[in-house]
Amino acid sequence: MKKKVSAGTDNKVYEKMLKKDLSSPKIREEFEHGVALMKLAVQISSERKNRHMSQKQLADKAMMKQQDIARLEKAKHSPTYDTLLKVAHGLGKELHLEFR
Image 1 (cartoon, rainbow, N blue to C red):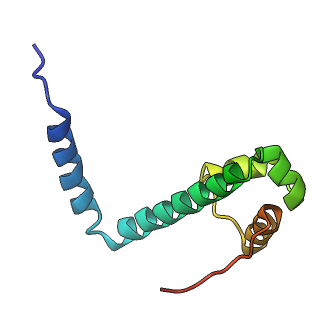
Image 2 (cartoon, one colour):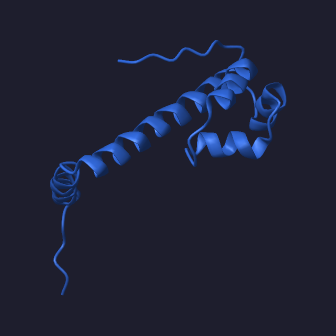
């Protein structure tokens, strides 16, 4: 008979594993890169939806393919600066990069 485990217990186990894994500089760097990509993906998707645009409409304005917009919004790859400029233009926004 399997023992039932609550979601709270699962979260605690996950948090312990994550804390241990993030003590490795290489794993921490990869994790932070993934988080940054996800934040960018959410921002692009949110900006597009706020303008009531489809991925195809944004792609057309940005002179890109709809599939490229979908990949950006799924954080499937790291976009180039030129790609981000195209997306910003398609959204009618300026692109600002900064170091913090």
